[in-house]
Image (cartoon, rainbow, N blue to C red):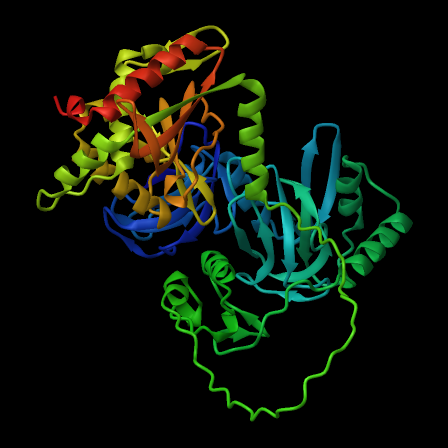
Amino acid sequence: MATVINMPRLSDTMEEGVVAQWLKNVGDKVEEGDILAEIETDKATMEFESFHEGTLLHIGVKEGETAPVDTLLAIIGEQGEDFSALLSEDQISTNEQKQEKTSSKKEVNTNPTSTIEIPQDVQVVMMPRLSDTMTEGTVASWLKNVGDKVEEGDILAEIETDKATMEFESFYEGTLLHIGVNEGDSAPVDSLLAIIGAKGTDVSTLVTAHKDGNLSATTETSKKETLKTESTIATNQETTIVEASVSNSSNGRIFASPLAKKIAKDKGISLADVQGSGENGRIIKKDIENYTPVSRIVTPQKSVTSAPSVTNFAIAGQEGTKDMKNSQMRKAIAKSLAASKFSAPHFYLNIEIDMANAIASRKEINSIPDTKVSFNDMIVKACAMALKKHPQVNTSWTENATQFHSHIHIGVAVAVDEGLVVPVVKHTDALSLTQIGSSVKDLAGKARNKKIKLEEMQGSTFTVSNLGMFGIESFTSIINQPNSAILSVGAIIEKPVVKNGQIVVGNTMKLTLACDHRTVDGAIGAQFLQTLKTYLENPVTMLA
């Protein structure tokens, strides 16, 4: 019997998912545990496994498209099985309309009081929602022009989101009749992106309806003028991305995954110099990571010695300012951090820790074979133990109540290419130093390789952010809501300190605790830091 596979909810805030890639095609055999597709959210791209076996009968969400949680993603059953009864009423209705041979028009009624007739086989392409936090997208580049022939699977455009710049494929064939968003411009999700249909089809009524925000019909004259204007604008757009024609290119465009493009850009590698190992020569992540620049031999020229001369000159140069549009990811980060900063009244507490005993203890612990503990592991452990003694810090603010968490889940901020993620070490207080170290290392590795699961980044009750490895002595962080506090960890600095009335060489570390004043008062935060100081300056107490 056929089984319906719905779009999974990969986080507690996820409302929609984007199918980044299907790894099975309709008609393929599916075994339990096979990867069906890669589904993208604003935090990660997750591999989605099949928990059923059979034949993939139907794909409900095509690559690059977005769909709400719990909507039809796929159907698996016996080969040749009739699954039409499992399709939604809307899908059945759409299929029936396509099968009507006597109808030369199809109607789309998006307003109860207004119906527009759309020519048969015309497809309206809307700005996709490529992450659950995406509200608008930016067209980085159009790879088709108005009037161009479009085949199913052709790349229409590259769209920039808060996660990455993604190739947007066409799932229809025909002629590109209209471009609704020019290169470099942004548009809200579900706004008109493009129209594809039979060559010469007049779609100006639909264009005008979307532009005006309603579905009222227009006259034949205005339809022709609108289509002419839109076509002229779209055709005259300046190309902003020029790509070289190499072995893995077609029509002058290099085929590379969005992640490969991002890594290549960060490393300053030209895609034209990279040989792709993916399907059809497509450049993928490992090609960039394994790329070795070709050495170029430069023949030195003989120098000519001449008498030195003195020349009076004025320093000359060009002054200029270049605006770089904010990426969708930076917009999402700005929105999240601004919401925390301006909704939670932050205050900051500073303390300096004598790390002499911690250094000696760590050296002793790491002398044990196959044992590796970092200072950050010791700090995370000390925070977990301090939170047990000060439960007011292990809280979350809501409008009606302050939530006291009986569990202690500490988030550890990790920098990745795309920004910042916070993997969570669950039940940190119950773990040993070595267990914490192993867990943090494993989670950080997954985060950097984009293999981390969303549930591994959720549920933190406190956060630690460490910039000590960059030589930063002290800094302040913005609270990772719904936490009530975040600890900023600086570098261990060797400097003169006073001990027993004598100036000696010491090693100290500065900590800054950012607190939400709605849940944590100054005295509570200070007491927490005092307890934390005791644990770190006497690490043996953490081993008791």
